Length: 149
Image 1 (tube, rainbow, N blue to C red):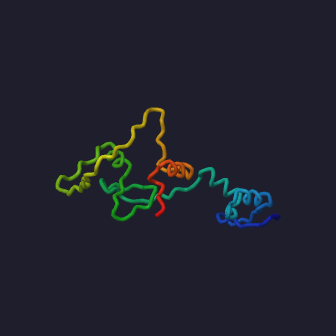
Image 2: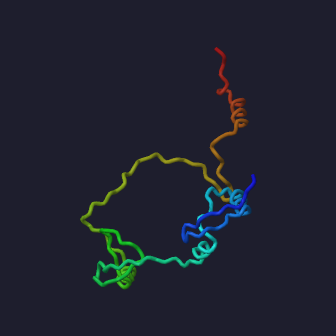
Image 3: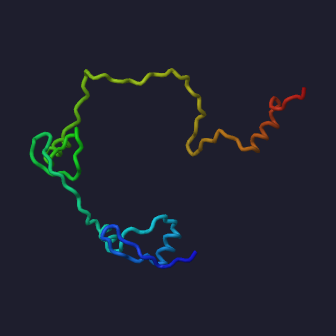
């Protein structure tokens, strides 16, 4: 397969960059399905970790203090400021409410299974037989050979 240089557009900055034949061959050898979407400068910027984290201003659910959090709060979930969050980490989890119903799993009376004991250094043998083992078992088992009627 022959490759030729192609001009692509960066989705971050909009600049055009060359997707060389050598890079295309590399992508082909690695079985990458998608063309690159970022120019070398934007790719380097993303790799250096200089991403901007969005901060959302909100009030703490416990103390009411104005705070910022690195995520977008969802409705119905409490949002804590740093000090309330640290306090909550130090507290043990509350015991379950004794009035709330406890779901217990049913006990099934199953017969005990007598499995062969495996000694140290031994491995368990598989329960399936190879076709040769099956043929050998049939040939040596008199009940496995049926009498013609």
